[in-house]
Length: 434
Image (cartoon, rainbow, N blue to C red; front, top):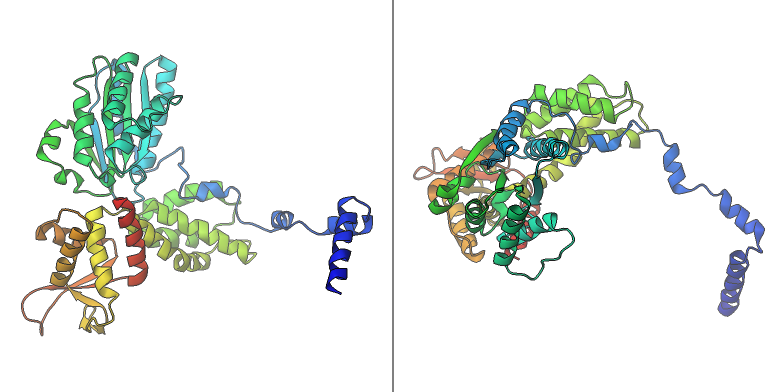
């Protein structure tokens, strides 16, 4: 019986394939395509890409001063002089990368029009986390037809200098998340000293970091070789975020779809969390998706509230990945201790809570982890600074020990699920080791 059924199936499939069974094929053709069905769905979006965190708008509100400062810093090359290095600091989502790319797009248009010799290369140092990888990524941008994989770092470095000399070109290397480079001292020292060997061109670094203290950890010899301009991008406030969202929403959503309370709430949430424009944009994008799933004709603050619950974890995990490695180790120590079941009950918010840790025990665990990951340890002063920053980011809660505890210490509690934080940090830290 089974053999008969199998033969009948193959015979019927043959008829279908050879177009002899027109009735079957006609029925198949009448079935609605699942993607065509999606096209017929009602949507609040006009252009969803514009409300994506990855979209770089042509206009950058509230960054006019920073655009001017970066432009002034690079303008020396217009007269064939060597620009200073630029170092840009600020929290995630404050427009650092977008602003730099905007200025470089303008510079590219200018040099093409005025026959100037200037080239730029963008390097994400989280993906290219060593001097060799940064140099290799850079040289590929200037020699796209050649493959330098397998050559030594010194050879690639010499080719970079050779390109600048031969073309009499000004090379601009944008090193995003520069603090992720393991041998950062070697990289910065080599690139800054490279200008001594370039006769009629130059090599300029634009370092971008979320770590305001990044430069303080450089070797004194490296710091002395730098001649740089420093810029700090402050977080956006609620009013600024509201205007940014209004501009994006006007292009991303259909007319009269987005309500004012929805924009105000998304801006307020993002401002309260971190002043992060990407968080605000992500909230609006997810709120729009929720509105579509409900077949709603308007996007309201209720959709934004629902979006907050769904994107909060994504935002936190994204923030963790941008932290400096030493700060990741401190947070990992907190997550590791908080995930242990035998942690005692202590007070941190006024009520008895689980997972409340002493500052001292976290520091001891951090020292062990730094040794495990073969990282140099920070001092207790830097440790306290990192704890303060983690509290500012909303990742932990901190309070003084108060009465009932011998001595003065701080009680610390992780603000999110310890195991999820731990897994995310392990992924980052082990990736940096590889």
